[in-house]
Length: 454
Image (cartoon, rainbow, N blue to C red):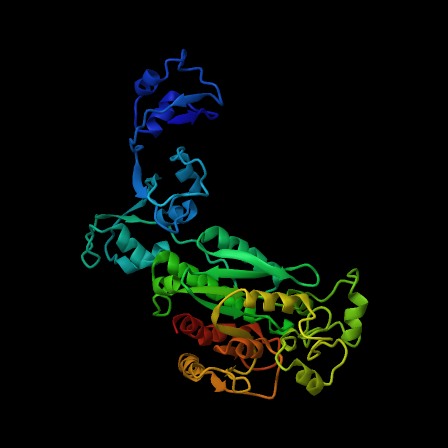
């Protein structure tokens, strides 16, 4: 194998890295006249011939593996794995069946003290109990002995998503970047851009043939639905990565059976307007303030930045909705626009949906703690059974129809005759106070899991 000399390399260091001797290297590299005068960039032959480097674990690459995910599984750094595998030409492209070497991590040692239990030790080191037990297979957790040595794995990484805050576009983008970096099996892309050029992100989790879609923040002052979906994405990723269940659901099976596509924020311009207001230097400042009747308080704003209600934009009896609303110009809420799909955000959602084969969609809104599940008798018979299951796990009340048209859920049911649901979280006046968030999440996490299972 060819090796390129790096800054700081010595033959002794290289030999030790590959579990061979300096003489082994010199034997196959007669061009090395002075072993103490290596040149950076010089290429030499390493006679490994399948020899496993010292202090490493042999690993055979499996389907879906990336170096980042392997590094997380073995709790070692990505850089350390790359350094121990110079034979990998492109670290971003692994081949199933390829053999790589994982450097053994050094675990902390702990001596059992009087009164210790595995549970108390786990609490003391902030490490899950099952992780400590797994790191000490030779130990009976129920029969610890004073003076006995056990190994303490590193604590798991801190959470990324903080849903207990005003959660806008910038928070979402930062969290998506970290989630993608930490969990290599998650795919993040864009389906379009908002009027002001913000990306409309879609997150894919899972590899199964069944496709399911969730979305949030169609309405600007309902932004609490975005941290709800982001929180779920991270919980799902953590459970899958650790090969553990989530709220009793087998995440490994869900991942293999279902491909989940989440658009956490359909209306980023509107969300930012509600949370941050609008800067006087923004070219749309005068227009937006005029639409809001000269008020700089945008708490009641549901529309996009042009004053179009994105959930009244879809070609499902749009003309009737337009006449019913009676709003013929941009407004903070309820203006359906000049025509169906006039806005780039609704266009992107429609095109995205047409290009997939969704078996079910959930559109998240607030508030009311209800689930709308029908549309003009076009919903499939199975929809009622599904919404009854959602009711069982959440307590939310099913409502079949209301006098409304042109919504995303309505259009999906009309076009595909498949189950579509609008889930209204929480109670009160939008934007809902963040103090409601913990209950909202607990009410909905099993709805989301059931949607993947059914």
